[in-house]
Image (cartoon, rainbow, N blue to C red; front, side, top):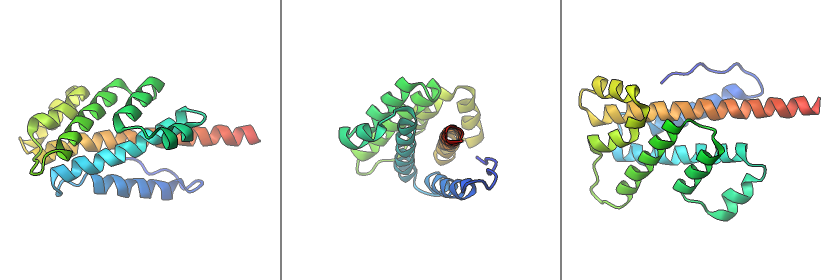
Amino acid sequence: MERDKPKEKDGLGELYDAEKALFDSACDVKQDPVLTILRVHLLTEHYLERLIHLSLPRADRVINAARLSYYQKLILVDSCNVIPDQLIQSLKGLNRVRNHCAHELEKTISWSEVELIAQPMGKLCTKWQRESKRKVPVFLTSSLSYICGFLTGHVGGLEEAKMQRIEEDHD
C-alpha cells in the first residue's frame, strides 16, 4: 500500500522513511506467513502504544508500570475511540492468530485464520480474497498491509496534529 510521502518539515520525511521501512519488512509477501504475523503483531503493538501515549496525559505510567498485554492495550485504545471498530476487530483477530503461532511448533497460517483478521474490513476482505487467487501469503499481506498502512497514517496524522497544537500553544 503506497502512501503520499509527507513534505520535508520538521523531520517528517525522515520519520516517514523509517516508518515505511518497518512497514515493508513486516509485510513482505516473500517471507513465511507465520513470521509476517509475528512481525506485524509487534508493529501494531508499537502503534497501539503510540495511540495510548496520544490519548492519555500520563500514558508512560500505564505503559511502563502496568505491563499490559497486547489485548489489554487494544481494549484501552478501543475505549479511547481513536481508531474505527473494524480495525479493532481485525487487530483482535491478529492477536488470536498470533497466539496460535506462539503455541504451535510447526504452525502454518490457514485461509480461515487470515479471514479472521480480514473479515471485519467487509468489502475490502472480499476484494483481497478475490485478488489473492486462494494464495494465503497474498491474502495475508494484502490484509495486513492495509491494517499497517492505516495505523501508520492515522498515528502519524494524530502525532502531527498534536505537535501543531503544542507549537500553537507556545506561540
